[in-house]
Image (cartoon, rainbow over all chains, first blue to last red; front, side):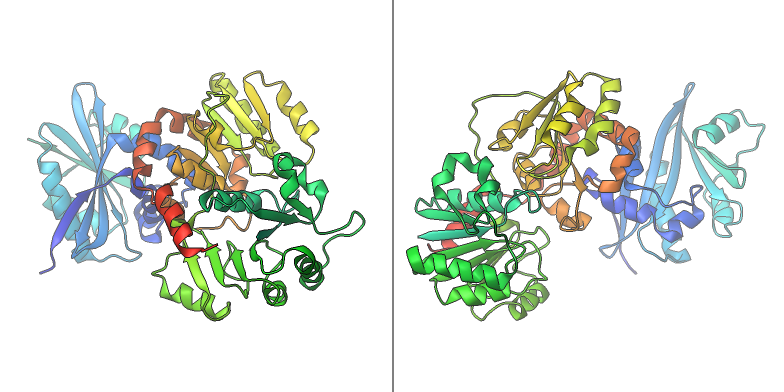
Length: 166
Length: 337
């Protein structure tokens, strides 16, 4: 069994982080399909990276994923938008599920927070996995729906699922 | 006697001269001469005019390596037999060195590309991408050089200025620079956008070989918060008292790395084509392309964010591998003059 370890990211990964985000495999599942320019990435890094808690996921010392969790507030609610960035040009279902499992260990510690994930409606893997980790689809009549959709700039072809961590 | 043969001027810039000046200081050289093409290129070097030798007469100029080597050999034969030659030039390589080598004690070549062939006894290349441990690189360099050449590679042998006279302290928020001969009008729109955020204290350094100085001076004269410094003897005096440095990715990147000064680099020419990881080796994590300067709104925004997050950037630079004491020690140990 390969050993999975994690490491909190630091700012020195800024350029590598961009090259991972721009990998085809990540753009395919991201709402932004375009290659991100360095200048835009640097600006984003200074503005938003501090609000994001990210950690690296290694499998036997090989970096496979970055787990991301953007923390924000809505009224009296604490929200987290979590995601995964593949660090390899090609990924597989087993690695992805292992990374989700590791990410959930982190999320389970975020008590009294609502955690959101978003995914392409066409994605066969992601449209199935949320059910197994306690997520519920965010329906349009939900009080969070408009706010989350607008804040996270989620397109219509994307689903949002959420769970409350108790 | 040590004879330097260097490129200097509008076309070649100031980098070659900066590198040999650093070597002169590290090796504490006293008896030396600097050979350049023409005295007209030496206006900036007035303090050491007596050390400068012009190789070409007024009506003549550089043609090729062979012709240059002949003139240089004549100079050696007439006055400086058995000298050590230190050469920093993009134009003079294998042919020149092979011819000159018979008339001198040793040739030390300074280069920042690996494509050139050499016939030198010592080869210095401080490109941050290089290291002694890179066997493939050493193999390639050995093929391109003569037998028994000593290779001094990577930032352990970096040649840049570290002296600080502390005479005129100029405090500033930003310093803009584009090398000894680079066009600083490229920064105009970015400075305009920055001025819309706040009237920051900005220093604009204009190198000694920048063309159309008067035209550039006129462009920036209307910016009341911009102090123009033309032909500074040493940029480190200015960098020490600023918060953010915006520059071409030339020799000055070593100076700002040494000072752990948050820096935004622009790759202005084909010599400045390192990968991210190589710039990161000397502590520079923010490097853009020349064409990005067209996005002046975004560049100004980024510079503003860098100013507000400069402690964060300084922390990123904390492991930069430049150590001036080690560099001095390495150079003195390896170059016995």
